[in-house]
Length: 375
Ligand SMILES: [Zn+2]
Image 1: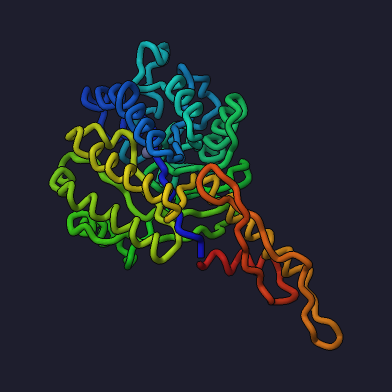
Image 2 (image 1 turned 180 degrees about the vertical axis):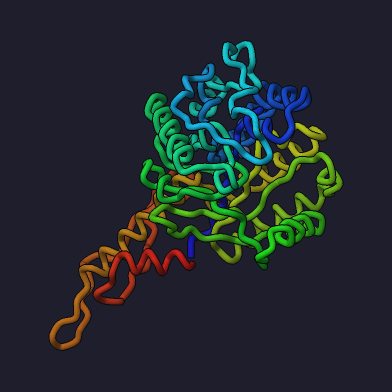
């Protein structure tokens, strides 16, 4: 089990996140506020407390203006029949329409200290796992992200699917990404999606303890499930008491400190807009308390990319150990000279972490992968 670890992933999307659901003046105001105020404030809360997060950014908003999108096959969804880029201002740039473009914002995040991870939240925020999406568009989205990563010198590591709708994982792996945020782990997962939604809503109102998670392999890529989404404070969600929001976060911190594993908190910087400064105050308090715990050595705070790298490193050590173990004719087991692996310690530092090695012999690495998939 992973030593006590907190991961924070942030879906930064400005107006890209919901224009297909509701396009109006309020969306544009929210996008502009997030660009100018919300995301910079959130970055300050993180850095002031010495914490690193994974910022999963919509690829198209990493640019100063809209690039040539003619290489993206068109998609038509039941909920949004217009051309996908129909609302996006074609001749605008970050200076004139900051609610759509955030190249300088990404630069600010990239150069913050402690170091933040820049991941991808797709290229254009198309939902992947729903009717209307195509494999060709998914591959093209990955290719556009990969091109931007190359141009900006960003490692291709972490990917967050729009609306957490996970699909086309093998293609994501083939595009060179190493990990993705998987759907939230729930105490009980129903086959009916509506029941799952109701259970999650109940947990938010009741302030119940979130689940700890562990990384695993799916389709050869590291899956990191979520533990808790901090919801925005609009519509029915504004009735979730701030005390319940904070109680869930504190229970997660206490649980991960005591039981080990990963507490994976996620939300959108855009979530700080509605009912402000309510959600920002909750987040600020949570980050303060997490910062104290990290400085005391009670927990680590890693990015998704760091956690995935550690997981792969430990897995490689296990597989190497298994492949080099063999029974002698007397039936004795020979182990490799060194069974210890080295992995990431506290955030932004590296220290040796002992890795348990298996005593099984003749292991098939693919069988190991299959076993890990079911963890
Ligand atoms: Zn999103």
